[in-house]
Length: 182
Image (cartoon, rainbow, N blue to C red; front, top):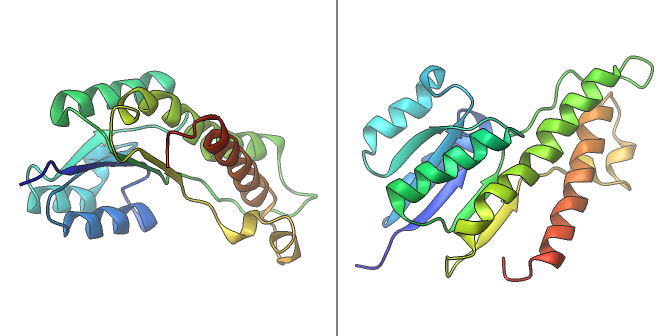
């Protein structure tokens, strides 16, 4: 049997992240490290890990926390010995506020989680990723980040849409600067 493909998914406690972990856990020869801010309170994720021992590992992972991200990668190295695919899914998209309402603190929080978070995760995972034959780093974005179409949407998505647009720029730049990654 070939080596398993090892994934790390941030923001795995609900929504898209939990769905990704659920679907990946169904695949043969796959190991998933599911990052969550508070693993103890991630009820559905804990059920999934219990149902898939040795296949789904829950690890504490806080977006944009450099020390925490490097500690998570250390755990992955010690447990699996490698990392093949990172899906930077953790994000924030609330509250939805209009231009005259959105607080600077809201904008900064969104930037920290939606832009700094994936960049810090890349910094932490790159040394292990570059040892893999697969080497993939993917960030989850949104059509709301499109300067053309996203700006046409009604509603107050200033913080969410603008920071996801910034994330797209960071990912494009990483792709150019680290061509060895898929």
